[in-house]
Length: 275
Image 1 (cartoon, rainbow, N blue to C red):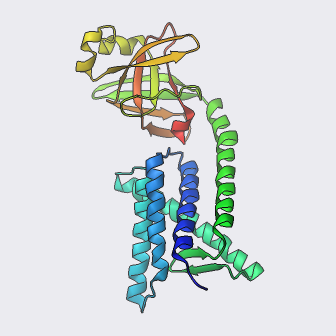
Image 2 (image 1 turned 180 degrees about the horizontal axis):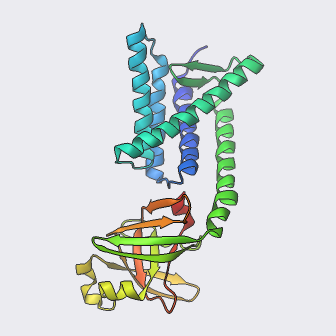
């Protein structure tokens, strides 16, 4: 079988797209477009390892270590991972997805005698037209997206949550509501905004004194809802952790907006932040 570099790299870039998207669902971790694109490039470049012909155990061991390093780099880029413990966990899950995919390819090969699949150096090559490959990947990605929307988001919306906002020694714990309508983003950083409606928070930071907001690390961004609109004080300082009282406990990558509670203290977040 002849290996064409364009088919090899494009197919592995697309496969990386599907794998990373699956991993996002498995780990309930959000993806950034830039990280996703860069991880696809890493997957494409890493596929060139199929061209190497190891000679002996030592070279095979080095090749395997190189493949593991490429996998770790791919997930670290995709999910912006910095802590080594998370990189190891995500890489292990990514490898598990790869093994499952490899098993399916081998099953296809054994059952059909398919001559269009080539597996070498822990990499798979498909000798198929690019249009067919792109069609199959698009179908797989569509199925994943439909699953995420119909199953995961429905489950997320039905649960009850608590949100904890922590900044230094100060911490506040509020009931949290998942709302797909909360698409507010900080116009400076691009981060999604979790809104904390709490009089206690407003008094702690002196939100009503707009002249002191900059010193506190806040900036005002416009927002609107069905009930009206205005300017919302938003900060990137501190951390927000959401839990459901069972297994889920996740630190969100987000900005924090603070407003008056109007008699009902709560936090409102987009459920996509839990993916």
